[in-house]
Image (tube, rainbow, N blue to C red):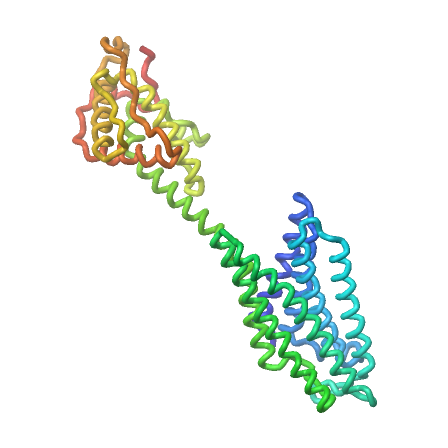
Length: 407
């Protein structure tokens, strides 16, 4: 029966390694990226074989007892080696060739020594166990387990030292959380590897070894897989959360500007930028798909700014602007905008401009960028919504698609 937790982790790692490898073609593949992809492939294959528990079927198909167990152990050894290589490559951005070569040679020697010891043990299957044969069989089988356990533990200790250091130095909360989970995963993996000493002692005492993982080893493997999934996806979830918060803020800002935009659009329909969508022969104005909330907010602010610039022709010098971005100032600005809109609606379409001093500039925030401007315009829109409606003039009865005549 397939273990669902290990199978899910295996599928995720195999897919992630392939995706990162293919994505690296555009941005270049650093040594650390290549080693990480190789770890994902090796460890994913190891988890897949462990989850499927297909060792007996593979062994029967080849006629060599313990072949699938040796293959699984070599995949775990390779995974640990690639983790250590990743730690070396990240610690030294220039990727010291000698240090990387030493690690590669160490991994190859560990795999070679384990293979030789396994063949010397000449194991045979007996009731779900591997039984070492020959005079040196138990010692060779114990040596095989010791090489695998020792090498994997040594690589994990190297990685644990680096991840602990990186976690302490991380400034970003999401990155620190991800590194903390990777550190915890490495610690659990170290305990998992150390549990292999039980196989060493068992081989020395009885010359026997289980053909599958024991319950404790499987439990540690599940915990390691869950923590690895959590650590690998932490940054993805953090990015998704930030994107969702940005979308929510943009959408709320877009909705908050609605009263002000509608008031300006009713007087000056030409401020609406075309979305390229036609409804009943008319261009749909002021609407965008929900997924484009940030773009819709930018567009709505631009349209309001255009409307306020047109509205300057109908403001008077007495409409002086306040300096503070307060609720009282926003209400005063809303009153002035409403009065100017009333003048725009009630004057004759082709009539002259109002005489007198030059019109006042509409008040806009001095600093803070788009966020401050959205907040200020939202205050005006809320204040405008609470004002009593002004009487409609002749211009209000015209088609909303017809732009007012140039004065």
